[in-house]
Image (cartoon, rainbow over all chains, first blue to last red; front, side, top):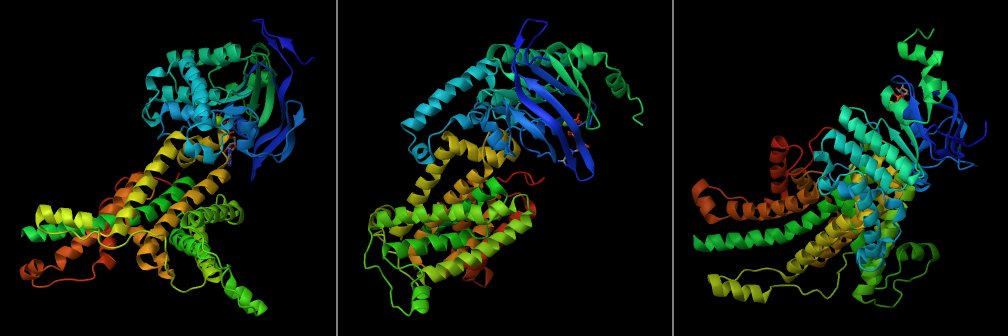
Length: 269
Length: 336
Ligand SMILES: Nc1ncnc2c1ncn2[C@@H]1O[C@H](COP(=O)(O)OP(=O)(O)OP(=O)(O)O)[C@@H](O)[C@H]1O
Ligand SMILES: [Mg+2]
């Protein structure tokens, strides 16, 4: 298979951004991920699906460095990645959101999204204390990017609101905003639409497609809503009990017998 | 009765000045607790260590002179210079930053994800270790801190209050300076944490470790920053306290004064630490004033003295019963 392909809607997908090779992750006796390999291509929307406890979140946690797999290799932009801390991986251009929203609850929407720019803000602390000069210019420049994210996500009205006070759907959107502010190469979304109503899901799907389209951001997303997954993703990895049981386009996956069995709850033997 | 009211007011103002010092020490605790969940028993010793180092550097004392002399049979004491106060302060700040870095390297780094009680024990160890190091480095004699701050009665206030009320308030210049410096420090810290990148990162870490990591904030970097800031606050507190009553090892006991402040204000609340300190400062002076007064004695048939030693604790205990999370503290659910 050649590295690049063209999607049905005519987008050209490039080479491998990230490649997971034979990843195994154990927690004591529990095998959360069992010898899984797959890749994520430049510009693609890659879904990871599977029943509860399949190991999907664990996979994202491996990608962003919260978990360290016991076996396997992770290749990022054609280079084998050494074991790294989450903040170092963030610096490489991988941003994420969480299944259980992890926002800075006491801070405003604006401040939350500003933290997404942390990696791009480099003035040293002594200068920050003086505030004028480089620190101020940097703050203003980054502020502009953040304001664009806020406009993009249509959350101008809640810029100054402490996020703890926001309804769930908006919190999810702010969290996406924080990840976008980093202008990541690879964006990881853990159930961005969980707990949303139909209208909110439509909004979120549109944002995800727009991010991918306008900024060319590569996206890996976990989602339970099959309708959404089939609609927006280019390729799908299916996990069950820590194993990969399917990988391909939405159509291929939909017709895969192992996948159908897993979802219909056929006995795993 | 009017004169009693005036004396009471004077006592309260003096209490407020002392209270500001309590606030500072408590603030150091809160910062570290919020960022890392560590109850830093060593905060008081950091104040002592900062003050000792400042005096030592300013007077050109040779660090570890006693140790060097004992080993090599020499008799060196001083380098023979006197540094200007500003230079000594800057150098001392450098030492406190170095200290923060060492704490992270040698201690915190190895204790990530440990139980809070273990971290607490580690800071107890750190406290005694630092007291020992402070002693070895600078000697255990009481030192006078000379930063050229004016001390004694503030005559302007004395004269003005005499004109207005017919009674001149006794307010110490040093207390006024200390209060002003503390206020500047708190305002500066607030601005820093609200409007700078690192300040925002600090708040982020205090709020959610995982999320902070995911946006690229290094916890270890933040810990160094927090401990350095706490060290700086400790230095200010130590210097102010030391200027008043000499730099001596009992200075580390201000930890014990900060404890009731924390119970009152809540361990995670910066406004709580500041207001709690003031409440305790004012409360203990006013209480002392009332229960030792003759009219209290006439009414109840007894008077009390030296209540300052225990009043803060009793007040804090009463608080603890009715509002265990403190005035502004987060609801007690779990440590985040
Ligand atoms: N930190 C951890 N410690 C121990 N076990 C863990 C940890 N994280 C995940 N697991 C285990 O790994 C397995 C996979 O969990 P994971 O959260 O990755 O599933 P998931 O596919 O995201 O499920 P869901 O759809 O419910 O979010 C589960 O058995 C879980 O209990
Ligand atoms: Mg999950």
